Structures are given as structure tokens and as C-alpha cells.
Length: 514
Image 1 (cartoon, rainbow, N blue to C red):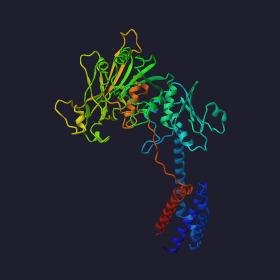
Image 2 (spheres, rainbow, N blue to C red):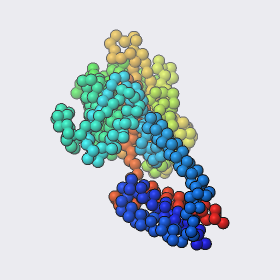
Image 3 (cartoon, one colour):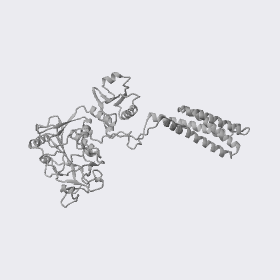
Image 4 (cartoon, one colour):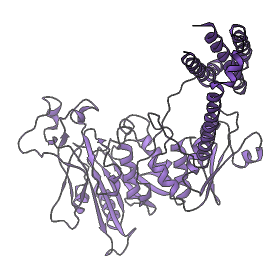
């Protein structure tokens, strides 16, 4: 490279380094300022020493000045465009959630709940800036507030407002999100979308609905935390404002007057005649029944089911397709498909359900009530009548066995217009050929828990709670030290942009001098 060209390149690079120190200081990278100042001044000095007499004057009065002016004008125009874009972004903010699990996207249930608010709700979040969750909770509440003007929030520093802490009984280890609407209050059990939405539902559904679960026939303990227990499903119902209580018809064969729904879950022994009659009277008067019945069990509820056009098949559904064997590793855990024609399953039509060891159901003809299917097995499935043989010789279709798709859940309704004593205007009955799909062992599979909750919500006449609920989601996190953050900021905001600028100007200067 010729000496005059080298001098100009060194001088130009030195000038770029010198000017970039301003950016370095603005972003707090003071440790690099001294080095860049020394290098920049050295580059400019070298340019003067190596340059020929009069070169500096020609540089600033010739074509360099012309191109420099155009570059400056372009930079100003770019700054104006960026400023306008930033102003528009602050006035109408919009974001894109690119995370794998859509951590920053609110679920359908949340959106429907917040947009459906009919009264104002304010959330008091007791988090100070020193709290680790302060920023995360604030971002979550802002996303809620963007959905409806009736949802507002206020971040309360517990150290600066001890009176509010005392008023709402806030503790460091307890709930710290308080939802207030008029005289009603609710606390979110967890500072995430699921906890906040559930608290919002409890707050806006002032009247608690009581759901009874029968006992005394070998049913799994509702609150047991074992695999066969239903504690997680019970907690999910309670999170949405339901009160879950046991019901022993052996002690008193009568359903309480405050029952919004009665659930029979996987009984192992048959109901006695007085119990059966109590359930039939309850249903005939406009009661709401959910029957979740296992194969190979004679529960003694056939007359009740026949009243509403249903019958239990004495079989076990087998599905040999590879997809159906993903869960459990055997063909007796079929992946079943919800239908789109009923409110319970409309939101779940594109979501499969996993039913472990389930039986099929039949629709009886000639009955005053005609039920409709809620869930169907796959086209390759069948109802295996030799249940014991499945686990000894393997599953094999035999002539005469029912082929899929098979109804595995039925729903029936009946008007109570002719009843003298009635609990509601309509009897609602749902029968499912499996009583374990929402147990602690299986409730997390596919749409199992949503299907159970939707069923209970429909039975209890809480149709607005029929949806796909938010799941707890965790974002992928990368933890950096302060030094690593400082280095990344320096490289991305300062060093790399100005290095490209200096390199580009140097190339332009060399080509111009040829």
C-alpha cells in the first residue's frame, strides 16, 4: 500500500476510534475508553506523520468532503427513521413470542376470562424491586391489563406500605397477589398465569358450586396423592371455585339439596338398591350426574343408565395402532378423539385423550332419551370381550366383537318440565367408560384433565369455564455474570458496529485512491 493511502486509512480509523469512545462511555464501558482514546489519537497522529504535505487539506476540501456530507445526512435520516419507529412502538406496542413453549403468550382461557369481565378488578401485587419475581410478575400483569380496561393492577412494595401488608395478611412465604373487586377479594395461589386466572375465576364467580363424590364402593380416595388418587384433579376443580365434598349414600340415601353435580368415580363394588334409587330420584328431578366407570366392574348402575338411553358394554377397548401405544406401552390405552358437536369437547376437538383400560358404551333404542357420543375410539380399535386373554395370549380381534370407532363417553339431557319437584330445568348425565384417566397418574396426558374439568363445569352449569386451561410453562434461561453481560454489550453495541464502519470506510478510501 502506498504511503499516502496508508496514512489516510490510519487517520480515518483513528478518527472512528476517537468518535466511538462517546458510545463506549454512554453504555458504561469505561474500562475500554482509555484504550480507544490512545489508539484513536495514535492513528490520527500516524496519519499526519505519514501523509504528504497538503494531503489533509485536500481530504477535507475534495470529494471526501462531498461524500462525508452525504454520509452525515444519511446518518441523520436514519436516526430520524429510528426515532419515529421507536415512538410508534411506544404508542402501539406489539411483541412476538418466539419461545418454544410460548411463555409470553396468554392461554385461550385467560384471554376469554379477562375479556369477559363485567366489573372492574384490581390486582395488588406485593413485590418490591428487590424481589426476584418483581419484573416477571409486572410483565404478566401488564399482559392481562392489555386485554381489558376493567383489569388494573398496582405493584405494592411491602416494605414501604406495611399497612397494606397487614390489611391483606401478606406473608413472605404466602400468596402475594390479591385480587379485589368491590367488597370481594381473592388471593392467587401462585404468581403465574394459572394461579392468577384461577383466582380471577373464583373472584368473578361469587357463588361457589358444590360437587359431591360418592364413597363406600371402593372408589379411589379423592384427595389421595397416590397414583390412583385424584388429588390433582380435585385441586384443579377447587382452583376454579368448586367445593368438592364426599357423599355417602349408605349413611343417608339422599343427595343434598346444595349439590351442583354428583360424581361416581371408578367404584369397585355395586351400589345397593336404596343408593341406586337415590341417584335415580336425583337425576329425575333435574340433577347432574357424572359416571366414570371401569371395565370388569358391576357397579349396579345399569337401570340408571338405561333411563337415559345408555348401556355399558362388557369389554375393554383395544387399539393396535402405534400412536395408541405411546402411553402405557400396550394396546389397552387407546388415544381417543373428542367430538366437535358438544360444548364439553368443542375446544378439545383437536386434542386427543388417553384412556387407560377403558370400556365402550352403547346407545339404547326405543328410549325417551337419545344420548350422543362425546368421545370415540380410533377406526382400528375394537371391543375385546376376552379381557383376561389380552394379558395372556395378547389382543386379537374375533368375529362378533364390536369394531371402532366406539363410543367411550356419552352425554344425555332431559327436560324436567313435567316434574313436580325439581332441582333444575334439565337433567344432565355424562357416562364415561374409564374412571382413571384423570387420576394423578394420567391427568397430565394430552387433554385428560381439561376433559374432566369441562365435564364437571358443564354438569354444574358453568359453561363459561369450558375451555383449554393454561398450563404452567417454564422458559429456557441463560444465566450470565456481570462481566459476561458487559462484554456482550461492548462487542454487540460498540466494537462490532464501529469495526465494520471503519473497515468499510478504509476499503472505500483505498478504492478511491486507485
